[in-house]
Length: 286
Image (tube, rainbow, N blue to C red; front, side, top):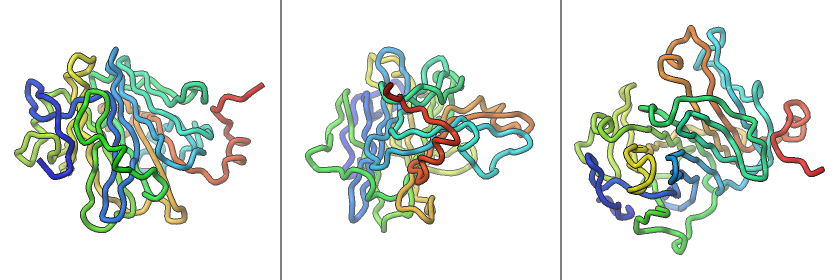
């Protein structure tokens, strides 16, 4: 096991040393900094997947239901303004067993940006992508806040960059049944951190995570992969992006069909102007 990794909990039927916890604190470690980036959570009662961003210092952003049509197919420039709303809060992404996907934050925003995506137990492959820029705009990971041993409540996963700090970082979540993930291995090692091969032929280093034994969804595996990427916002100090809530692959990959997904971008610098033009999902006191 790599130095610095928390000790994994237990075994699955096919995977040994798979992390099993309700909440994962995702951190990045470079030669000069250690920062908490986001959280991934599994709901005990039904296996819902949550992604939360409590560590980013900026609260004003845009959340959107993005539509790509045959007339404007990917990889066209991604604009969040059509279908978008402004918020002054860091929202949470939720993906439920029936496929309902949405952005929310209890008591703070309306659950207005939502869609019917693929039921979570039917997903095999890409489930979300997060891109981050500006490590100084995220909370530091203090030694006292670390969870060096795996528990069923929370685990800190430290993603290492041994060389210089990357301009930006991309995290990709892949969601698989246990059997399917073995076919994605390229390292030959079955453990808490391994190399995965995706359908497009790209290889990623990834942590292998799941829900605790006895929780709904314990038979599913989240492979959380990462890599350094070029700068996201050349004119800004920091950036946070997320996409998820995809349609079925036969729709996404067919450029003759319209497809939708959920996306966010933080921060926005012209929040007041955008709120006037697009509207807000924030609760307003009367």
